[in-house]
Picture (cartoon, rainbow, N blue to C red):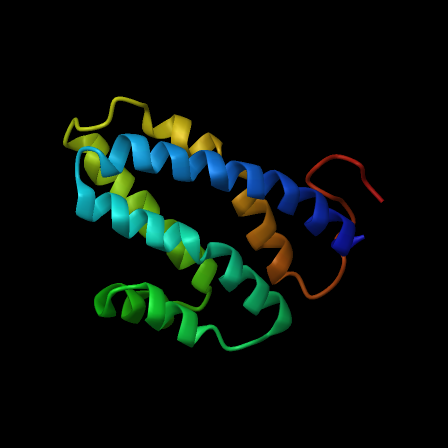
Length: 138
């Protein structure tokens, strides 16, 4: 049950991740290259960190290799590394939105990440859920 939930939501997440990367590169990177690059770096390792969490593997090498030292330190200080990545991306997008630099709504970007939250929640479960977020039930 848990595996089928993860597989179905992972497919949707992959599609959402591609869409989000396109939106970040088009709307954030174009107005602030350093923020855009930072957001894309965080997004690029999201899948690796989810996989490491599921397998209970150490993900510190990936974090240190892909993120600047300050960001790597923040992510590794958090209990849930994939959630920390999403938090950092949201922080960057929110900053650019408040500054009036985005031509797309912040909400549009986060609607694409509905599945990320679902997968993170499922990876944190220790046993199979009684329900699956995609609606198929048991």
